[in-house]
Image (tube, rainbow, N blue to C red; front, side):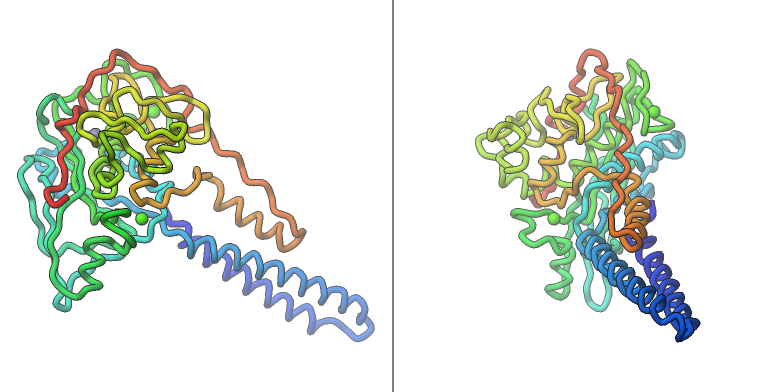
Length: 381
Ligand SMILES: [Ca+2]
Ligand SMILES: [Ca+2]
Ligand SMILES: [Zn+2]
């Protein structure tokens, strides 16, 4: 996925330069006998130019206000070759990451060791479960690094995801970048992980979807995409971060965004405190379509679960900047809209969002394969 800011700014610059060049050329070619026409043209050009600049300022403010979180997977510790043997598992994993990335706009500090600044990361090896540590990896700005693999998980769990631990030494700004990624208030009221790890079951009967944007029948198998979304939620601190734990009171989640979606009432959690209570329902974003929340503790064979409004609210409450529902055509349409704004001073309507969440399957008998004791918490939290 190309970050919006990479394509947006150069296009605007070239457009602006071309426009200015044509403006100057037209003025120099005009004769004195065309004075009235020239004045009119010049006024119109000034008007168009000011409109264009106003539109440009608006556009610049849009992309200085928003970063886009990028989830990067590392297969180094997939020693069992799960992702090599199942290439569609990578397809689905990347799709799950795009689902989360599409609405997370936090600017995360880069972690770049050197000049006396060093660190060590530790996380469960996704293929063995043993502790894995790495000295001085680099993590790019806005990026979350996730080590993935598969193994035979206890209690028939489908997946096990959590954020990693770290230890650092160096300057205060370095320590801050490592510990909070620049998230003010972390870890108490925000969360800025470097990343973590996810182990997927090596023994489950998986459904690997060649096209995760469509939902079809796959009864009897477990949807890999749905599990990837769920475990990424845990890596990002859902049910696991200190900023989550600080909002749990008496076994209920009191985050304001989630509470607002529940009629002002705190949300019951499962016994681990790391998920919504079993069978918690919410709606798919932008629709009134009910779905069991992605971050409840179970997944039914044959069913797909995407993040619901309640799941996004939980992420927001623990400190993530959750943006409104993305519109896939927003960039193109906004660009066209700017042209229209400059020439006609009106903004074109944005394309409506394609239905990505229709025809959800209800699936079969629920099987509690994501049981509470499969949630492992960061040892430091
Ligand atoms: Ca599909
Ligand atoms: Ca944040
Ligand atoms: Zn879970």
